[in-house]
Every structure is written in structure tokens, then in C-alpha cells.
Image (cartoon, rainbow, N blue to C red; front, side):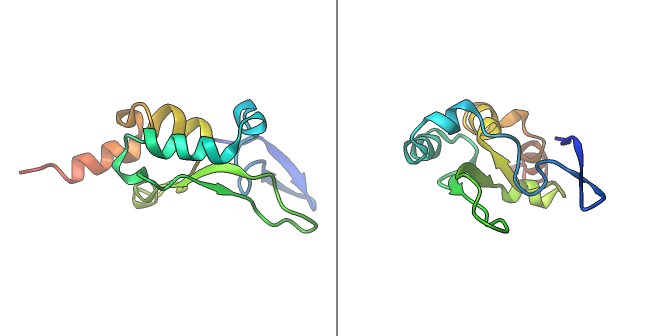
Length: 113
């Protein structure tokens, strides 16, 4: 996903490169621990089983709000950023991993013989 450009210290940068997409309404209003547990239970992708966690980053003065995250080893294997966030986890990893290009690439490489 491409994030819009913004200027920081005179240099163009992409919003979300370090922090990810904006928080979803579910992440703002829900109990994140319960949401994390539910996503781990509902996970259909073998690479994401029990890998969903809450992430908060240190900034210069404070920390970011905690958010639902998954570091996917399959994405790293094909050169994509390994971090995926709530909407991707909910819609792809927990519902239909066949939509994920990293999952499809893994399945093509590891066809049972």
C-alpha cells in the first residue's frame, strides 16, 4: 500500500512508513487485548498462527497508540514489508489467505509431492 507523501525536515516521506495506516474505528474503540486474542483464534493462515500482537512505537517525546500488528515471515520472503495491520489481518489472514500474494507464493514454492 502506498501512503501519501508529506514533508518532514524538508524531505519528502511517506505517511505510515514507520507507523502504518491510520487506526481503524475498531482499534480506537475496542478492547485491544480481546481483539488480539480473537484474531489469533480466528487465524486461517498458517504463518500467522498466534503471531498477532499489540505494537506501540517510541517517538521523540512519547509513544504511539497501541495497535494490532502481525509480522508475516511469508511477506519478508518475497521482499514485502513484513508488518501488516488490523484490516489486512481481519480480511485476509483470518478470512481468506488465498488473497494474499505472499501466501500464494509460499504455496507455489511448497507444493506437496
